[in-house]
Length: 333
Image (cartoon, rainbow, N blue to C red; front, top):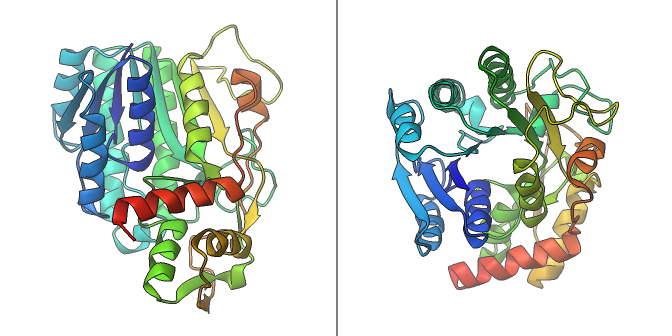
């Protein structure tokens, strides 16, 4: 296949691109190399991908007029996976304009490009933050998601809505997936696991929000990539709804799917697993839960299993040591 992956220097886009290249597919990786976090890490990810002759790197901003339109016209991908976005719940409090530019204007530019140059399947990375103030657990794709608690979540919900309208108007087979706290090797430096690892190894205290009680549905990156890879081959509408939990739209070839482990872990349990992997104790500074954060996330994976079968679920006792091994090797600590 010819696949365009936006955000290919990002955590998830990198892992997906590497998986596709390993299978022999041609991948065009598009990334803007924003300085939200260490650009050197992003360059290192792209350097790994560039070792494959079937990888083409394209640098640019999503929202640049005409750039994605011209790129799709030249590459003619069969599949587009849109992972590029401005991420970070807390960062959206400080710099909401970055989210409007990338997640709203940038996603609109991509939809316009796909409208002009149709693809077999468009896949969009969304977030569990879209469930917002919903207190019904586990989060099911059929739950109403109308109470975003951060501007980041609001922009992702808007992206889902824009994509549905384009799917309806232009017949674009589209799958949006909501990720749940992805972690693993080559992870994002703004995520808790990465931050905690750096601070514990340097002897700095870590900030623990909500007394360590918040729970997250930690999803190991290899498990998530396996799910995304299988979903590439299941464009909607297919043969129609696969069960009562299906979100297949009655008005468009559009579907929304959770990708998570479905087994929430308390923050203090994650820290304990990290301490064990590092062989060091963390000094804790307890802080209240910040605005925009939720107390618990938990994915219903019933629809995912209906569509692609059982997906591996790596426990944190395995996933966290794998991250630590990568971190020590990459940073030489």
